[in-house]
Length: 114
Image 1 (tube, rainbow, N blue to C red):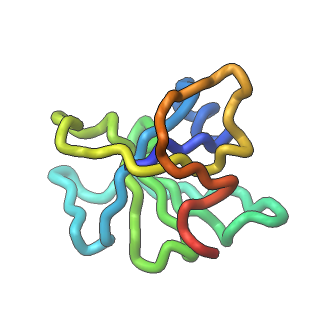
Image 2: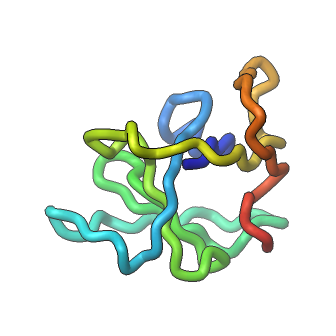
């Protein structure tokens, strides 16, 4: 599980930080069909277009640079207890007032090599 300090997700969720857990695309299935896909804007210095999946709220994201991976928001799971926090990503976008006391690795941008 990853703390994701992305400004876009903060604005979309209304929360100061998002929690995601990663899967291979083929590991996921939904009981109600595939959610709608929204292509986010491309900003200079950012990876290619993110594909964000929506069903009245952000459920997951996937980017071309993630090579077959999809990241699901932990809040959509009935039981998030089995997940273990592993890292922080996009800490350059974290609000200054937000302090999370842990020894997890912190990455300025993505925790995945670009």
